[in-house]
Amino acid sequence: MNKDAKLKQFAKKLAELSLQDGLVSAEKVDAVLATLKTHPPRKPKAILKHYLYYIKQAVNRSRAVIEYAGKIDDAGIAAIEKHLSANYNRTITTTAVENKDLIAGFRISIGDDIFDASVAGRLQNLANSVS
Image (cartoon, rainbow, N blue to C red):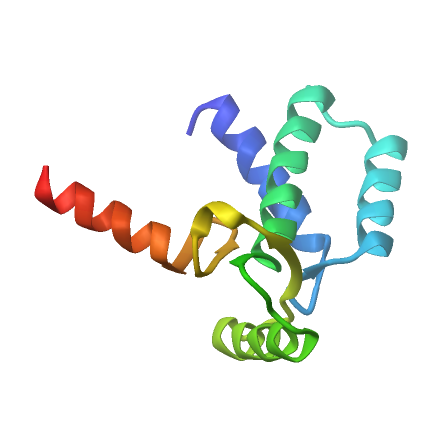
């Protein structure tokens, strides 16, 4: 294993220590950073860069962006949030954003996962299959 891979692995372990019930915990992040400050590792910038990357990934895995066209009420957003939390087996927080380019329907993004139930998405899929 090369040195960069070891740094990444160490940063990933630090990120895992920063989680509580699958979510990033501010207290645990503070504890990790305090420990790194009192016992600085070799190449701290590289480790912190990788650590930040893994923390951002963890935050994005628990945050959903719901893009919608038209109207959606708070009860609908809460139902989607509840369904996503049950489906992913962890707490998912949502942010709703109106996007008129979707024409109708919605698109949900969670980390790298995208669920597209919009007219614009279906038209794009149709255009891709024809060309």
